Amino acid sequence: MSVFSENIRLLRSKLGKTQRELSQQIQITSSRYSSYENGKSKPPVDILIRISRIFNVSIDLLLSVDLTKHALKDMLKLPDNRIVLPVVVDQAGNESIEIVPQKATMGYLRGYSDPDYIESLETISLPFLKNGKFRAFPADGDSMPPFRNGSYIIGKYMEGVDDLKSGNTYVFITLNDGITYKRLRAKNKASLTVASDNTFYEPYDIPLNEVVEVWKYATGIFPEDF
Image (cartoon, rainbow, N blue to C red; front, top):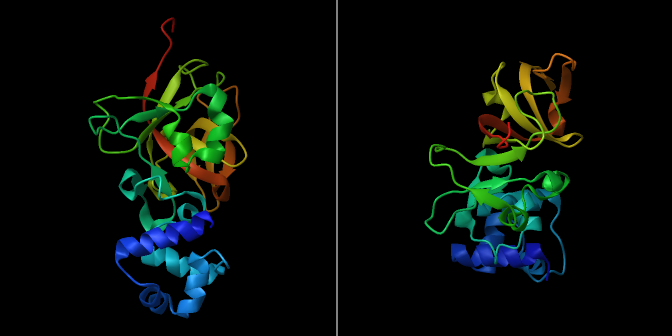
């Protein structure tokens, strides 16, 4: 069976519904729904959207993450069922801050929504950072002083670009550049204008359709000899 088949079987059982009851809710025949759970066929996009909405689980999660290994209570659900962030907690139940090391920056773009990848990262706890989801990203180069190689930017997850404010600094996760830390200059209709604090570098635009995640600067970690 596929991950999708196992997931919808698990989620249906959690709802306490029979295949017939769920198929009626999706507005398809029970035999057609049964073929999805048995892995004999795959639903078209419109049916996949209905299933996602009924279970209140993102399509990405349904298709790519084995929910039998990861409890839904350990996922951070975002508005409009867009994506789900894995949430890591320590033994006391406190939310941890995952550290993305320099050597894993390229892997982050592939694994940012994968609980297995996130759980593999080292974590720290900073008790003064509360009311949000935080993650630490490595600084690179000299474009954003005082950050330089060896230091880390800890960012707070932003649910959408509508909440971004000009003048603030953010870690942008983009399809082309991966992880980049910049100051927001302007929000445009189809892009974000960002700039380095080091005036040697010119401002540039990030197309909105390339933005995967945005993390607002919360605090920093610096090397001992900084």
